[in-house]
Every structure is written in structure tokens, then in C-alpha cells.
Image (cartoon, rainbow, N blue to C red; front, top):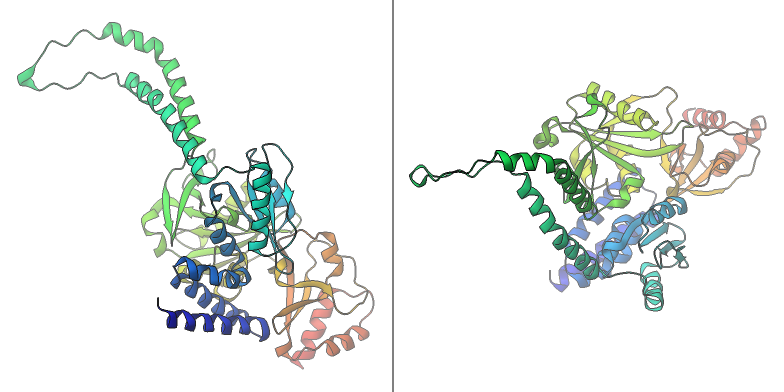
Length: 461
């Protein structure tokens, strides 16, 4: 790519970001702009230009920006992923006793690094900053404590372990081969009686099998044991059984992408494995999962289902196993999902704008990611008490989404990934003055559904 082409792409990047930041765009226009940004990112492969577009990715694709940033460090193998909540980050970081690091992201505050300085030690945490600033902080801690092993050191450790295991595995497999070798007829020789040897091996077989199982277990510590792999666009996904004890679910498998461990925070990927080679020929189903209190858990993507009825059945089987439930199921094409399932915001836009609704629960209300709206309430008034099913009422103006009603709902929990919501837009003729006038006409305390219906009635009149 020459200098002129780079300059034109940089100019287009600025125009796209200006549109995202300062113009009032629909969800579809936002998704279209972000898709174009992703296309530009993929055009720019040389390392120098990647550094130039890192700040753009940080705004539009924080998940991918963090992954790309970690890939450029010598500590990629000890990177645990990008998180948006302290609790999930802490759980992921502490479940592995070895030293490691992870990134916390907040749209308004920026980035933090959490660093485990030594096995079984509490994390060191940077201040908020951009990626370059917090990485410089991590390098200072690394120099002070020698916290992390480099990727080269970890690979060398894995190779040494493999070398140690290889002779044991080979010896074990040799003992397990009980059949005599085949000999060509023209070179027939007298084969000794193997009855004594076989008896000896039969006596030793339980011990040999135990040794081999120990070797297999040790090898699993190097890499996770998987049934099969599948290519999802540019990513290699590993299949694993979701319920080994349930015979009816044997063909339903989870998908894990080793290069993107952080996406498991907001989406479960499933595949019906009856026809793996032709999975792209089947519809793709996308759903919202909630827990028993109606708190959003994750999206759920199902590949390979043969029809709508099978998809609904498989999705409900999966969520029941984990004591979740489905509130809505939509259908989406691979083209509309492929670019967006690796980022929570982008997946939300695809679900909202590009997926067709197939099934929904009674009184269904969709969910919006917490990072997409500002939680400060603009107009102060008394709300009725909330429970976890109570939706937020939001107003979108320009590129900001603000809370009209929902203070009590947010106070129930500030750590949820997404919240149920109704959305109004300034383009519909809704203004803060109109909202204020309608509020004064309603009986206090005010119900969210009642306020939303009153505003909608005014718009339609």
C-alpha cells in the first residue's frame, strides 16, 4: 500500500469517526460505519499503519484493539483477555495460579491493566489510561518484579514437557500393541509362542493403561483436549461437548475460539454437529439468555440447526442445562454475523438491525449493553420501585443515549452486561421539554411502561 492510499484511508477513518461521534445515526447506519471501519482495518496489514489505526480501533472495536495490542507484546500467551466488569476479570485472572495479565475497559474512563505479579498473589492494578500508557506501567512492574514469563520462555517450557512425556507415551503404546508383526510368505520364519508373553502383558495391562491415562492427562495440561476444529471466518474454533451425560444432546457441541477467549463473557457459540461440513448452508440462530431473575447473561449463537423447530428445541435444552432461559430467538445470515460476533456492541447491532425475529417470550423486552448509554438520569422525578424485569426508558440524541426512567432499576445492580430497555429517538419528535410536560401530567411515583406509552401516544397523535 502506497502513501497516497494510506492517506485516503486515514481521511476516510476520520470521516467515519466524525459521523459516529457527532451525527445522529440509526442503529443500521452505525453498524454500517463500523463494518466499513473493520474492512479498512483488514486492508492495513503492515505494522507501522497498524499503530496508526490503534486509536481508531480503541474507539470502535475495543475487543479487537486489545487483542491486536496483546499480540504485539512478548507476553501474549499470559494475556487473559479484555473485560468490562471487575468481577468477571478477577474470576478469570485468579482461576489460573500462574502469573498473567488482563485488560479492563470502560467507554468513558478508558483502559486498565490487572497484573498478577507472582503465583497466588493479589493483582496489581494500573490507573485508567490509553493502551500505550497502561502497557508502559506494566513494563515498569515487570522490571521491578519479573512478573511474567515471555512467550519464548513459556514455549520452551512446553517443549521440555513434551520431550519428557514423549518417551513414556511411546513406550506405553509399544506395550499395548499385542499383535505380532506381519511377515512376507517367502521369508517365513518361526514365530515364537506368545502365550507366556501375552499372559505377562495381561497381568501388566491395568498398570500400563493407568500410566497411559496419566500421560494423556499431563498432555491435556499443555493444550485443551478437543473433539474437532471448525473454521469460523478467520478464526479456528474447537468443538467440545456441552452435556456428555445426555444422549439426546450428543450432537450439540460448544465452540471455543482460543484466539478470542474474552468473547465467552457475552456469547455462547453452539453447533449442531450432524453436518459439520455444510454448516454455512443452514440458517444461523441468535438468542438472548437470561438467568432466573431476568438478568441478561449472554447472547447465544447456534450453527447447523436444520430448521426453526430444531433450533428452538436445542437452544432451550442448552439453557436448561445451565439454568438459564431464552427470551427471544432470531435468524441471521452468516454474512451479517461474521464481522460482528467478536465484539459485544457490534453483535448487539447485528441482533437489533439485521436479525429477523422468530420467537419471543411473553412480555419480551430486548436488552441493551450497559456501555452504550449514560447512566446519569437527566430529569429528576420519583419512580415506582423496580425489579429485574423493569425496563429502562432511554432517549437517543445525536450519538448519546441517556436515561429518562430507570434510576431504581440501575440501583438494583450496576454490574450487569445489559439491561432491558425501551428506546425513544429525537428524530421521532421527542424532546426533553415534551418528556417533562408528560411527566407533570402523570401520577407520582411514575411507572416506566406508563411513561413510555404516554410518550408513544403523543408521538402517534
